[in-house]
Image (tube, rainbow, N blue to C red; front, side, top):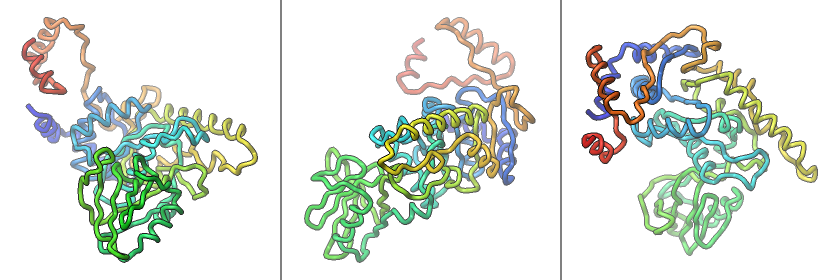
Length: 368
């Protein structure tokens, strides 16, 4: 049986329909309980397809977020799942910015701004801790180009300098551009491949994305958005919480609200300490302008439909939807215990499904 058939079975579940019904109410707050392991991924993917609403999943840390990201990419496709990470390791340490993460953050902002169909965004406290450039500022800082548009190469060159793009012989990473004759190569922070823009006089003749290693074109494009590094904390643009940036229709799933706010407060305290130790010769934005504390995020969550998942007992109030899931028993490679458990399930009226991550694993399991 394929995972699609398994999802199809879940699609008929009364509990799934109950969740979909709950999230259609604006600013509704409810809980779901007893989702173990990847059962959360199956429920989220099914609800996403049925409700057709954007979802924001907040996990406790980066590792857990990556685990569920992989699950959801398998179930609903990579184009429908976005990862929103933190951009750097420590506040005010610009040199420790992770370019790959900055690129991922910009892709998410660009996707939201482009008003494409809803997506599932997976994140964690460190990412929500950082404020983002406002939609108005992002629009102002984004250069949009269309094939056939009348615009000079010199103007594009000037705009890239203004956006703090670095000119180089060959583009290898986001934030770089090169000019050769009537061609500009530019690596935007909103795309995982650079663009090659060819001009015919003062007209954009063609736009293609290309592979950095081979320099070969990957696909033709009719229009593009070139976005600078909007995570640069030296810039003075106005910033806001990521929760202010996303659509008001977004449904937010979180696991432990108290843990989330505690982590945000701890990060904010570190940022405040780092700010005090900065050189007074340079004018730096305050922590309040750049970062979010726990109280700030907690208050903003009230403006969304939110779902508390598997809350600790002391934090639980009313559980609207409770599943009957149990953790997988540990068999410690004793296959007689596994067989005994599978037979017991069958005797109790359950259907057993065994999931394998690859064909090689399927073959090995059959051999065993």
